[in-house]
Length: 295
Image (cartoon, rainbow, N blue to C red; front, side, top):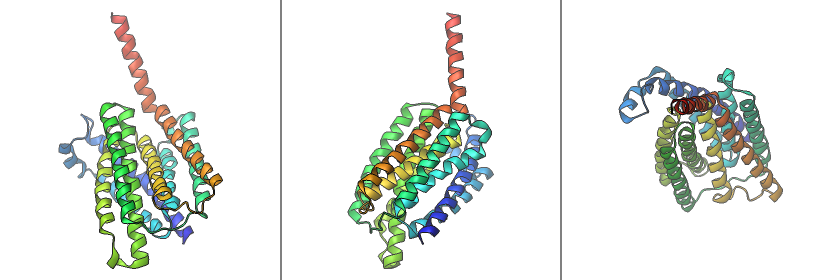
């Protein structure tokens, strides 16, 4: 069943890439004259492009649920990062060499991560105390990232909001795993209500934050930012709070940490070398040049 779970997770990553591109186009169409507001949200949910993206992302959610039913969090969660090279393929003409190197490095790091964890991590039931601690830690992280997004502008705001969404979705991954594992092993009568409530709250918060990310930057930067922090948060919770790393040797943990660092660095490079970021820097330099010549 592990192979089935990995296949579902890979297909889910593909759906995530396509859905992100469609929703990004829908958000940009509704926010050409300003940022995303609650008033514009009503128009957004009627936008055909955005609705198609929602349908594709719903399929992604179904595939992720299936994957988490049969595999631990720390195996399934990192695979979502494969959405990054997939969405890059949808925007291939916009990436420069540095961007492609970043995509390749991130993809390779995740492939190594999954291959090393698939045979070593162990399934664990999630205690209610672990759910509460996970919610506290992730909630604090999301708040800090939202504040950073509000204080920043341009690509910085885009990355901050997308990473906040990724942190919220990382918690969603853990809580979905708790619900599906409990139903599979103990039956629906023992459904963890605390995890269900937390799942709904984290999903709504992540969904709003990802739309804010789309309204402030390109789709591959949004996807890259949220799909790197998502598995980082989920895997950290799986290892530290859920005990999934009980059979992982110290050397393997070092390899996993290096893979995570490479993936995060890849997203940082992509954010800086994306054509929109380069164009913004060029426009700022021209504006400073005009200002200096007029004085």
